[in-house]
Image 1: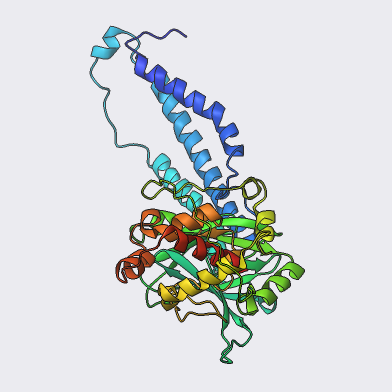
Image 2: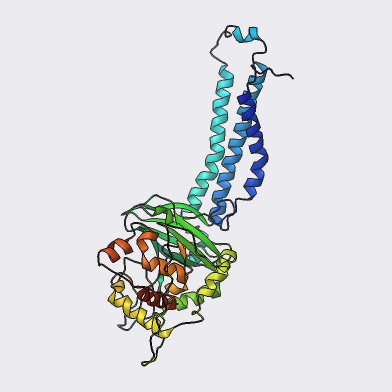
Amino acid sequence: MKFSSSAFPRSRWVSFALALAGIVLLPGCWWEMNGHQSTIDVEGPVARDQLQVFYTTCWVTLVIFLLVGSALAYATLKFRARTKADEDAAPPEQSHGNPFVEIGLIGASVFALVIIAVPTLRAIWYDYDVPAMEKANAYSINATGFQWWWKFEYPNEQTEPDSTGTRGLVTTANELVIPAGRPIHIELRTMDVIHSFWVPKLAGKVDMMPNRGNRMWLEADHPGYYWGQCAQYCGDSHAVMRFRVIALDAKDFADWLANQKKTARVVSVAQDEKIEKARPVFASWKQNQTGFVTGDQLDISPLDAWRAKQFPEKEEDPALIAQGRHLFQVKTCAGCHNVRGHEGVGIAYPDLTHVGARTTIAGSLLENNTENLTRWITNPGAVKPGNKMWVEGYLKNNIHLTPDDVAALVAYVQSLK
């Protein structure tokens, strides 16, 4: 079939070529959608159920696209102007249409919506809370969103009594540790604005509304390390309000929980031991620089990297750690943060009792290593603009830290396993 340039202009050929290229490249792109926050490569029943709804919607819309696109292509080719006379001819007489065709299209549209609606409604009921038959085995966790970090409490797990005999709930920040292969019921709350809890590989987004309780559940098929983040704009550093979910087998989870119940680790130091202060290298960091300074182990096997963080550092300086603990008090860090068994009364800021055992800091923005801790403690406002550690802590209390102070605080934080 021969096309004239006037009947089929160059712009249409370009559009046709681009569409064809998209169809050819689509399969390759599809199979590469397996990143840290992929909603296609899922590893839990809730995310898998939501993925099936997505696939159903895709197939229905694909059928609609093929039918409508085929009809459009057929009409475009069959009734195109073939000659100059066709181009100059008056439009044909217009009619109201065919009632049978119109009613049929309406019916087909309703049928397509029903095909989508049925699995969607089923998924809404299934995803809202732990299925009744599994509730007896469900594990409960409370998740609270702050600007811009996450607090996770284990309501059925009490800590060991501290020096005053006080017990509390096992509490952690930004890293949610769960048992794999077990339903996890999560109560969602917020302490300020609207946040949205999202772990793409395990479950879809659920909002945390002020003055209103919400809930969700998820389950990890097997032990793994999963990326999550806030999915609702909530202020200056919303884009870097992240968290991690670490799923462990039953034994590893029990061991982790037993350690979390303990008070903070104490590194003994001799009374006459000389304090050797290591000076960190103060690098030049860009404003809101979000790139990880990571090790190969976290990149290749994040779960193994997390396991390695549970043990004390190979080379510790007890004297420097003791100096850091002292600075934690005098620099008013203990007014915002809590280190059970040591110092601290803060409940509106991350609990640091076992912060050294986490793979990330700063709302899971940075890997928990010496360089990133130095960067964060030196100037948290440059890492996460508007965060309360900077505004309510450093600026309000006029906190200034020397390189020696930072080195000691970093050593102390890293010792809290």
